[in-house]
Image 1 (cartoon, helix red, strand yellow):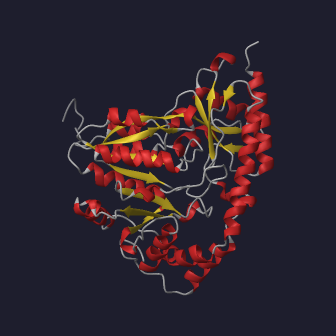
Image 2: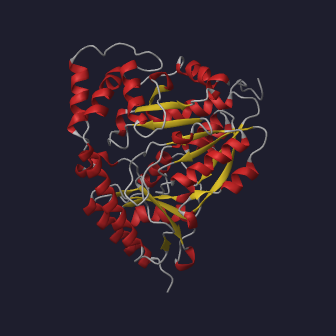
Image 3: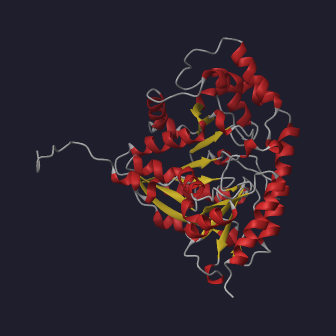
Amino acid sequence: MENGTKKWGFQAKKGMNSTASISVRGVINRLAENLNKEDKREVIPLAHGDPSAFPCFRTTPVADEAIFDAVRSAKNNHYAPTVGLLPARRAAADYLNRDLPYKLSPDDVFLTLGCKQAIEIAVTVLAAIPGANVLLPRPGFPCYEARAAHSCLDVRHFDLLPEKGWEVDLEAVEALADENTVAMVIINPGNPCGSVYSYQHLEKVAETARKLGIMVISDEVYGHLTFGSAPFVPMGVFASTVPVLTLGSISKRWIVPGWRMGWLVTNDPNGILQDSGIVASIKDYLNISSDPPTFIQAAVPQIIENTKDGFFSKINNILGEAADTCYGKIQDIPCIICPHKPEGSMFVMVKLNLTLLEGIDDDVDFCLKLAKEESVMVLPGIAVGMKNWLRITFAIEPSALEVGFERLKVFCQRHAKQ
């Protein structure tokens, strides 16, 4: 007892309240709290990454029917194996094999609760390596840093280069790495940048990682959501050069993020991940974690095999037109600058020129006031590692996108320096 008060033997981990534990959802919740409740206009959500609520982004009926069939069969009410149902793993392997020069087997695929759990598994497995550190992109997806902080895994950040289409600064990667570096993360197509890496750039990434003796964790949750001149190339193409952990899901391409159906895949034709114990560690972690719902796993083969190319083309065309609208509207707003037109995913990064604005302190202040004054929600760049930048989502209904940019323009005019 101290001063008449019992001393308890527990205390929250301080890192969980630091910037390392920032989340997109947390920032969006804060913006939502700042909305003007008396403003009866529709809230325009340019901060989120979930277009499923909008009619133009409705998933294919094939996916709906697959879920209905899996539930109605009454054969999928049981626990699934910790690595996932074999038919679903086989379907995912076959799907990914379409783009690879070698063949994955179902044993290379581990099903996860969305791509976020795949991130959690990868980070936790690497954190078990004594003294390990990983290299993360800046800007990037904050879940990696938050999971690393939770697992006490050291992280170092390399910059993405906006003037080069947000390519990886490979010189910085080499300078950051040391004998304890075990992996580097890339996100392709890019969140938050909307970038799509070329075959040549990914080849250089693979060669750099091989030189450093590290694996590549390739986040491809937005795989094939491309609409520019660059086609999507999976990092697994270069797995004979460097071992690759591929993270993905059906969430984005099929527009069903709430179904939480993802995968972690070992692209390892040379057996390096197997021999080093990484595969065994992944299996060990899956033995103590939760699984995707069995009926959703059971629906995966039907979803993947029966979805027509026309559905994917339609989604990509909508995203491409939205990206054109977004890029064009940005040119009419002097205080935000877009260094690279998005070619993939659902996002664009723009730089905030605060010297042209009055009464705006930084990107967070900008977004909070925009939400309050115009009922438009945009993600401050600090949430993805870039202070005084903004991440804008264009994956919403086209008419809402137009309205959102009109309000954004009015807001910037209102706060412009005279």
